[in-house]
Image (tube, rainbow, N blue to C red; front, side):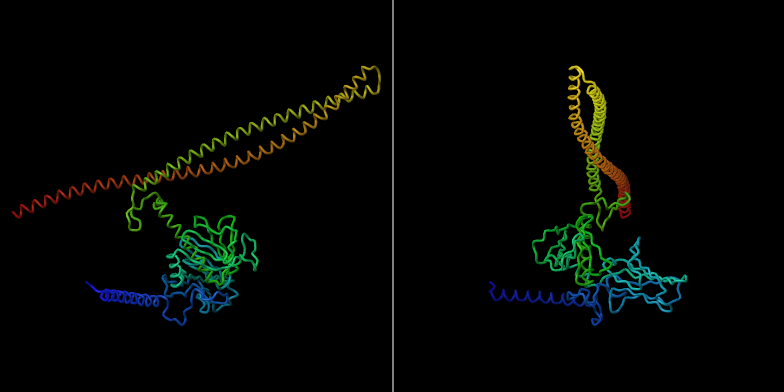
Length: 498
């Protein structure tokens, strides 16, 4: 029976061994991190600033050929005789500078481009010999062309791929592992409506969570704007301001856009990078989990994806389900289209009837106006030649007949206005139905195209499946032949041994 002292001794021994192991691992990781960061700590500039001020000169970027995960290279080419060199400024990391010797710099024209694999775009907001790297440049190659005016000499250089330093990467990785990140910033305006400097809504905190982006005031909890946006296909969108290096924009949807300002350029780059990394992770997860058909390219099936076998039966089943859903959606849209056509024909018939009634009303008014003029003429004749009481009675009758058309004229005018307003409303409704019909036609065409694409893709998959079945049968036949040959060889060996 062990005593309490023996138990505590064993426990203390285990704890000591565990602490020693943890200490050894920490030393190993610290040594490895020191080698990865930089060999000379005197010249090391921190990528994330320690204080929140605008005067701190810091950057996420290291100089070319530094000890980063991806080596940055500088390549020059062109037909030139003057001195041409591109490097990062030693006093300000993240700024590319072109130095030209032998000619006057004012005689040179500089054009900058951002290159990424199969496409590139010009940086029209930069025209000088220096360029400040931003979060948009991470993973791309920056190309600059220097043209000497008055000659055919041109020099071109490419710097890239642009990468961030190891410490910044680790901070982003830690945020991804923890599924959260917090950043303090200023709210400049909402949908181009300025926020006053003394407002409680000016100081904001941006939270990056696993599946959404949250923006709310730091102190005031009564903020009434919509401040959450889930990471989706189109939103949120993050763009940088070219004129102000501390400002960027976040769009939650088409009707909600925030203008935000940070404390330094490094913070803006890091916040934008983190938003894009969180957004990319959600899109990739959705792509691999919910859209398995995207693993096929050009109708051909990739049998192995990420060193894992791909289930052909599950793919065919998924495509059949998608196809049936599209067929149901297509039938629903056809019914909607038929209903819209019927409603359109009904409205056209009603408009024709309204126009016919309106024309009949105008004809009746013209007839009544003609009868009124004839009665007025008879009345004038009787007043000129007074006679018997019979003429007086005719005059009275004509006077009474003259007063009745006035009331009928007012009623006709009211009916005319009513018919005119009804006609306008019917025209408006018809235009809306026409637009809706056009949109339904577009949706139907898109669904038909998607249906055709899926049918073509499923046919290709079925062909691949049949081909695999035939190859499997051939392999089985070959295996049977090999087995028979092995049996014959074993019999021959036994006879030879006997």
